[in-house]
Length: 396
Image (cartoon, rainbow, N blue to C red; front, side, top):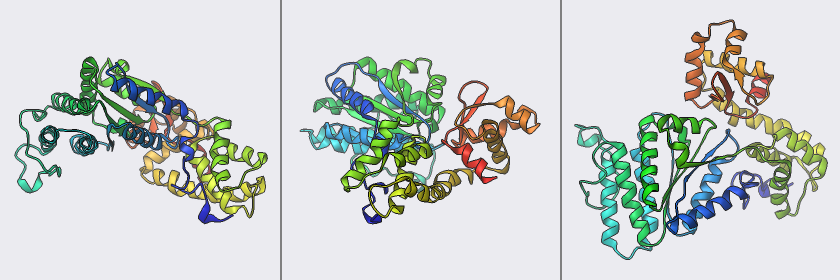
């Protein structure tokens, strides 16, 4: 069928496959927006799941919902070992601009922007030369004395309080959305938890929505023991059969096409219900099919193309980041699980490789830092990428 009209190409659908089956999460966030705007107590939100389940797309939709509700909203992606001040300053700058459209007092808006600028400028180390200082692009005078102590925990509380107060002026709120939240530095996570705790006590209209890998709750708990009371954790997994079928049928029907039931069986088996894979196999099947309905022969013909694309763009790009020692560790995991998406005992990996467990710790820790594996529970390790073990076994 016409590849130009392929509804599974990135950005082609009105609602991408990653959002199929997420009505529960979207409805819950709608309630959060309403409760916070009315001064009711509400926890911030943390989405967790493997790669490819659509956390980033869902996070983007939650941001859009915030903006449609009249909130200020800003989104960042955390980077390993990177300072939080710069990306957070840019995100809050955008959120304040969203609110400024409705705020009647331009001087009050400038005052909060001045506090934000003071916070942002603290990202430069003491004694840094002028040419090395980051300029945040906020065209107002700096307001010294708030959010500029250099202590990230104190500064976040003061900054969030100022921005939330601005939102309250127009009976709205602020949403700060953080992707890859597990990559934040330990002191930044601690400060973020402390700020959320402080604002929840005063019922300030500001929520943090984080998204990250399955071990993110453990990262937050290790930072602040009370973190489980601050966040509502939502696990995002693969789609069930009905939602996976809907993710294929709905976009196709908009193009006056369909899949027959046998094709849907094969597509669910191949994708495992993971939204990223549903989209990849759906796109390839559409391109391979000469006419509608798309049948099992079309899916079988398209499967190698989808798998080749995934091997390069989804699996291969991650595998290339691993060192030889780390690749050995990953292959051992794949062999022990026989390619299944399940955790494996770290002691079993050492035994399988005939090595001391302590000698494998550097490879394991580095893989965790790179986001390729996570600690499912104490003494166990698992892939962050679905079907990664199957991919490794296929490589030989």
